[in-house]
Length: 439
Image 1 (cartoon, rainbow, N blue to C red):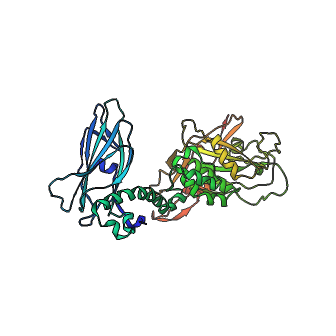
Image 2 (tube, rainbow, N blue to C red; image 1 turned 60 degrees about the vertical axis):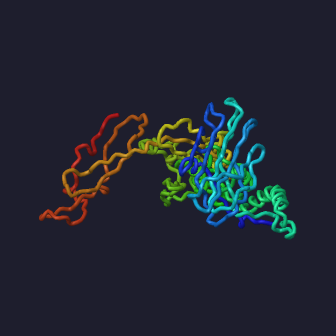
Image 3 (spheres, rainbow, N blue to C red; image 1 turned 120 degrees about the horizontal axis):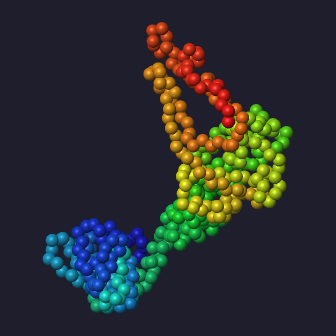
């Protein structure tokens, strides 16, 4: 039996329709080739295809085409060992109910195809051509039979064409088998097959991901290794949505006076390229009603307030609830993620844990201010985030600052740089510090 490695092929695709030395008559050509409107016939003539083999016997032609009723495709061949030879077309094949056939043309290193499109009338549907493959060199099952079957030229040709029926069927099967590895590669698998691969991994695919579902299957083991962890859920949601996601464990906000690590400071953690603050449980204290930052962050990801355990059906503050805070940069057209996202993340959570998804609009806009316009040598800048939020409060507001963060160049008597200092005389004066404002 012939094997896939014994055959070579040349292909005509959409790149050839658009580029190269080709001729079109009454045809529309882009990703595919078809008849123009109001045309019943059309012709496509390819450029020469080179086999690299002198006096090559071209073997088989295969079309990727739609040929409706009352339409046909007709293919003729011009083979030659010299490109400048006199034009000579032969071996015409009419395709109607089949898409492949043996090439019946004289031997030649080069081959040129002329494909004619026909339909019954202008109202009939046009044949559509997407790709042409032409295989070489000539190899048939006849070579496996005794030599006596090849002695007579006429019977040899008939037998070769007869055996090609079985060769065509088996070749397609062999081609699938030789490329079986691609069916187990999520990136290369056919569209109707990678869903089956997802079932192998027990994955629910995310409709909004589209082709990115292939990468999701590819990274499934990575996500499963982190299953049930805060960083694992944050990585998964960030990948699925393409947005920054921070996970809040509401149990850290449940009031209690034991088992807390008071000395452990909150720290930054990188999740899929984004930065989230990781909060630790601390000893519960009386709420400071004059702490505006504490009050302003109530209900947000940054909330450090302590609450009593909430045992209601939709309550947040218990050990069995986490919050998925997904940040978007601007108002987007209906960010529909909750329903589809829940189907996936629920399979990565313990059965007793409930996830609440919260979409946060975050203005990612920063303004830069020079903090010292008096001394030219001072190059530092402070970066502040625009879009502050204020709560309705009453009382007295005091504008103050921590001078420990404001360094300036130390300039000696000779006006040369000598390091940094917090000395009062080198600080930039600010007339509004410690001014009380009635609210």
